[in-house]
Structure formats: C-alpha cells, structure tokens
Image (tube, rainbow, N blue to C red):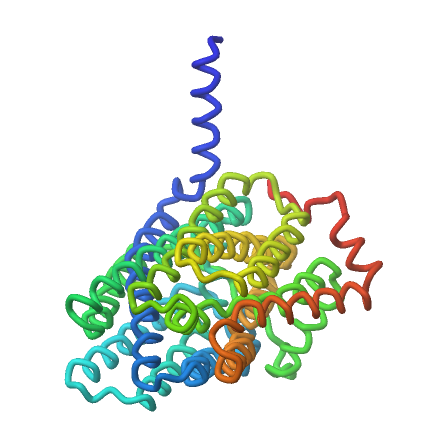
Amino acid sequence: MPLKNLLQDKLHQIICSAFASLQIKNFRYFWCGQCVSLIGTWMQRTAQVWLVYTLTDSPLMVGLIGVCQFLPMLLFTLFAGVIVDHYPSKKVIVVWTQFLFMLQALAFTLLTYFDLIQYWHVFILSATFGILQTFDMPARQSFFNELVGRQNIMNAISLNSTIVNIAKMIGPAIAGLVMVQFGMVVCFFLNFLSFLAVLTSLHYIHPEPQPPRPRSKERHILAEMKEGITYIWQNEELKFNVLFMAIICTFAMNTEVINPVFAKEVLQGDSGTYTSLMSSVGVGALFAAVYMSARAAHGVDKRLFILSMSLTCGLQLFLYLVTSHQLAMLCIAIIGFANLVFMNLANSVFQVNAEPQYRGRVMSVYAFLNQGSTPIGNFYAGALMEHCGGVSGFPGCGLISVFFLGLLYLLKKDQVRTWLTNTQKVKRLS
C-alpha cells in the first residue's frame, strides 16, 4: 500500500478514535447543546467577576463571591451524590438544574438592566448557582455512562472537556467585546438565551433508564455517605486520586479570582486585558482536551499526573517575575493545558474504577474536590492579594501547592511511589 494511503488510513483512525462518542446520537445531541450553553455560562462568569471588582475594587470581595458560589458544593455535594445514586434517570435532574440555571441568568439580566444590581444580589445569586451546581455536576458526570456506555466513557469525558474549554476560550473573549460595546447586561441576557439550546437537546435525548439501586429501609443518607467514603478510602487508586485532587483543586486552580487583579495591578490593564487572560486559559485547555481525546483509547497514564502538577506549580511560581502581557498569556495558557490534563485524568480514574452502585457518590466526591474546595482556595487567594498585592496571587498558590504535595510524599512515600510508578494504566476500557 502506498505511503500516502497508509497515512490517510492512520489519520482516519486517529480522527475516528478522537470523536468516537459523537457517533452516538444521544451524546451528539448533548454535546451540541452544551456547546452553546457553556459559552453563555462563561460569558456570565466573566462579566460577574468584573462586575464585582468594579463594584467593590476589592480582591477579597471577588474571592468571597467564589466562596459563596462554591460553598454549597463543599457542604452538600456528598448528600447530592447519594440522591443521584438512587435516582434512575440522571436526565431528569439535569433538565431541572438547567432550567433553574436559566432563571438565575434571567435574574442577573433584570437586576443589571434596571440598574438595581448590588453586591449582596451577586452574593445571593452566586450561592444559588452553587446550590444548583451541587446536584447538576454529579448527575451530569454520571449521565455520561447512560449516554455512551462504559466502553466510551473516557472519550466522552475528553470531548466534554473540549467543549468546556472551547467555551472557556470563546466565552470570555466574546464577553470582553460585549462588555465594551453593550455593557454587562447583554452578557447575562445571552447566557439566559443559551440555556434554550441545552434544554432543547435534552428533549431529544432518550437514554435507556437505569434501575434504581435498592435501598434498605433501615439505611439513611448519612450511612450511605459514610459507605461511599469508606469505599473510596479502601481503594488505593481512588484514595490517592482524592489526595492529589484535594491539593491541586484547592490551591492551584484559582485563576478566575487571580486574573482580574493580576490584569489590573501587575499588567496595568483593563477589562480587555482580563478577558484575554481568561481566554488564554481556555486556549491552553482546548489543546489539552483535543490531546486527551485523541489518546483516550490508551487508558490513563499516571505519569501525566506528575507532569501536569509540576507544570502548574512551576509556572505559577514563575509568574512572580512576569510583567509582560504576552508572556503572561503564554504562561497562563500552559497552566490551562496542564490543569485540563490533570482534571481529565482525575475524572477518568474515578469513572473507570468506580463500581456502578457507587458511581453517583464517587462522582460527587469528584465534584466536591473539583469545585467544592474552591471556597477555601478562593478565600486564600483573595486574602493573600488583599494584603500582599496582585503579584502574590499566582506564586502564593503555587508555593502552598508544592508544600502540600511534598508533605504528602514525605508522609506516604511508599504508597505514593507505588501508585505513581505502577505500570498498569489504571484500567483500560474495552
């Protein structure tokens, strides 16, 4: 066979492997709806952070909005995981959360349009978002299994990460243009409209219903939460995944809080500078999502955990020396790449190692660590910048991450080394 044909066949195989889940109609509907909705969500999140910073001129107040937005996940995600485990159709939960997200965006739109918006309004609406996200995230993560089946779960996770990060790249860029030309209210209104796309896509999705997990009458929600946590802690793969996520997600992923302060105080920029930094995160993460989607069939390579964590922490420390806008964008894009690789691997470890009867609770722990730990990190980053200036945000987060990773290694050296050097790539799906 000519070399040209061999290359074409190889390219065709790579493309088919990278987009395998999109051949499934239900996932294709879900993916397309999310493409539109997530762009709107990132437009609102970008406008919301800038709104708070312009209302208060306080990094700490910006950090506190992150605290109130993600505090419900810290407090209630594990309860939500038990509920998700017992509910036969994850679609129903996702439909209701998306509808209520749409109403939250409408409230932002009306308050801003009539010039009534105040800090406490943003505080309450952010807390509302957090409560909804508490149920939406574990339900949506578990919903992938109903959409594509276990054999395609890693590819579905990667493709979902792709659209999340396309949105993270495009949403802030559009928000920057819209805020300059039309004001923040249009960002909130476009997010309201974007939920129509995901609700329409969910209308056309008809997954096979999953049987509810039997529950004995004498069991209660706290007992089942304890059972789920015990299950994770007794599984070495899941346990160390939790420990790594707890450190990185809490302290190394506070870019949303740091970026507006870094843009204004260090780069001496404006809202355009801020949105360009947010878009840089999305660009890096998009490349990572495409890369992870293409290699999904190879399973989870734990060595990438080391590389992704090292890149994130190292670049955050390096940003202490950066005052160039272009260099800052490059560093933040690479951090976005590394963070997405890390989160994709962490999600996959949970998905492929969790037994079906525990999946809702396991994914609620993923949600808890991914966003529920954010209040701690946001408060830390906001308070640090309030007292030490915007230049301290990135290196302060990188330094404390390195400290806790080193402490974990010293206390659990043999176990961590075994987990990281195990030649088995967790579980390869077949």
